[in-house]
Image 1 (spheres, rainbow, N blue to C red):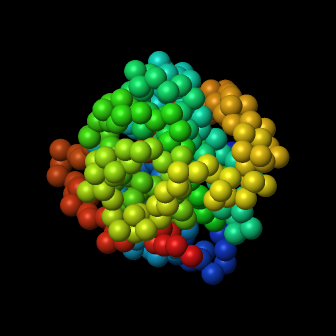
Image 2: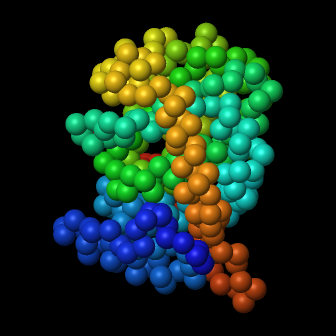
Image 3: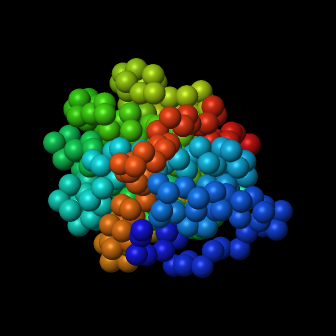
Length: 298
């Protein structure tokens, strides 16, 4: 069991559920409580997963099961989640990860990621995936139930040396997690300042990408100001908000101060080991045919 409130740090009581979906949230939570191998999941998890799966109970069950299994089977990514550990700090000091302050008219949060140190030796891929997932978990906690997310990956400064440091095991875990278990509605993924070797990158990851996610990808050699209105962007790109580096420093500090214990505690959010008495395992459960219904483009 966890000692703290998850998935929303500051919401120990269940969030208010839209009336038309309350019965399904209650039913899913009743199902969670009946699963002996998912002891740490809350009613807020039922709400979050149902929302991510567009209120489809069967898809939400499969996504939650996949989430628990991936967390249990990938300790290099989802255990020892101390924000102050050397590997995570190395990643946070070599990257900028920021949630932009203004949401779109549809209620979508924009997330922006880039390198701040372009030296490939500063990247440990498994630690980068771990840090990315920790940042996103904390952002879900900050946002609550968010209508959707738009992700901007900035390739400026990415070199072939970074590609050489990609590890297939953590990459496979990450792609499975994002497509089958991450409890958000992902709306669009922009790859800006696309590198000349993008075809080599896609050759590496395309076998792991389902068609639903592939349909969300958009590549451009220009910057984010060419695809997102500048009114949503930092001063780096002509927008009204603080520079990316300043926002990253502030959000990094929040992780280190407000979320350190919470992230460590989140390591309990996983499938419990199978009991020797022969308790049934959920390992045979297959993920949804469509990764997340929330991946559909509006």
